Image 1 (cartoon, rainbow, N blue to C red):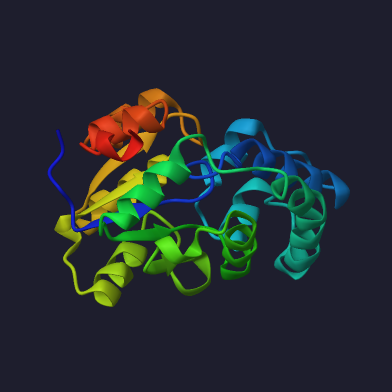
Image 2 (image 1 turned 90 degrees about the horizontal axis):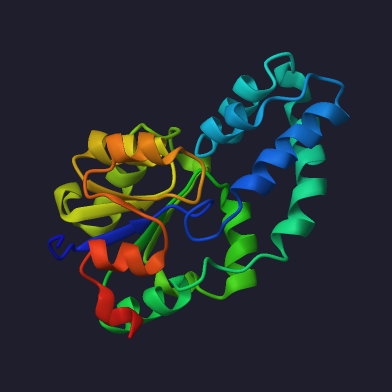
Length: 221
């Protein structure tokens, strides 16, 4: 069983909300709409967690920076309506709400934009559960440890007393770079075998398994 942590940090896309396939299809749609080659599933998934500019540069390398705004608009026109139909991954609402009620400190470290987080917080109603929210707008892309270091500064805690929960190798590498522990969920962006290599505490296939790894089973009773 993992030790009790002073801060539990969660990624959003592919972790708290199963958006990875939508993001992938959205990038492919935008690439096609702008007349560029459609990137492979694997390529798009490997960039989830990066900021938008870095993702576009990798997924649509023919797209000049002068068209990034057009790319993002094409992506959002396709993606936003479909995201609005999604809910949190089963079990997470109960887990997070019960942790919060018991005084556990929770935070978000996401490659999503601040506006994107406003959108999903409005849809899910769980913003109040998180005392720190770090987004791509004001941080270097994962695996740079900046998001976790910013959470440390904001909370007054040390990164060694945090655990990062995410779906991508980038999340696990960010945690390692910050000196934090990590747990991966297997239903998101990165292959399970790669997550097993990089997650310090293990890989969970669902929320009950995640709670078991972290010793938080009572919050799902």
